[in-house]
Image (tube, rainbow, N blue to C red; front, side, top):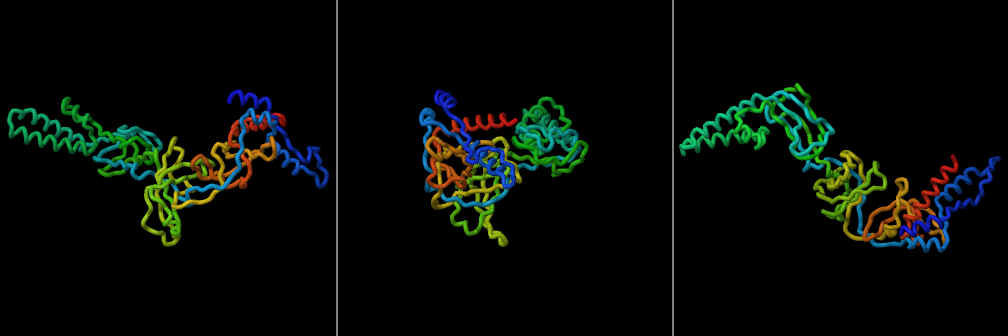
Length: 376
């Protein structure tokens, strides 16, 4: 492939097809707009000899109709994964002494987010120390030892409920020294999406402190028309697109098909779970969805290898004549068994480059850069 690329680099000739010839006509009824159109087309064209095409391994295949699984188009919004969302509240009353994390911070499982000075927590620790001492004193008396152990376990459980960890209680039992502050810890690794307190605030039991979300997956709340309900497949694939990332698709699975029809819109809520690599997707984003459905449909398709991306646009290279290829912007849809659905930009029977299209893209970009520098 490297030899072919080098051969192609020397053999490809970027041609600028200008039927109108650039003569700079500016008189009344001049051709500046027409000249601009021809220049734009020429910058998307590549001409090469038969030898160059063979050396590059170029192969073409016509866009053709194929059977794809049926899809239902719908819209919706992204939201937090409700199974990976935690509302952290105060488990003991007291004063907020320190805040270690604020909204937007990414935290690890068990990380301390805040610390509370709580008289109730101090009293429970003192009670635990007393119960531990009593257990040691009556270790030789079976009846008293059982009672003391029961009291100690009761206090231990209460301390766990307010937020103490088993490791902290082991240290408390051995050191007999109370911890002055009660730690508020992350329930899992995630992102702090809400912080409700600042140092100095006094909080009662149950007061809101933080909301924590695991953003590695999100839920899509999708609104599907009632007429499409029968064709929906629970557990089927959901393909999402967003305005923030044109051309990118995010694939997930349908988790739930709702039981209530919106009387005004005649839609049903469908929930899909979508992986969120790199946290690109954000809760609240608008999404366009294509949902797996029963049956098949006929679509215009080309091999996936024909698709290239230039400046954020999906393109293919169409052979317009022997040795002549032109870039064509297309809108791609579903993918299946190595083929991609083409929604816009191609007609059935047009020959697209399926092997070697990356090399054509490279040469086209070289020509575009050269043309840009030449006009400075």
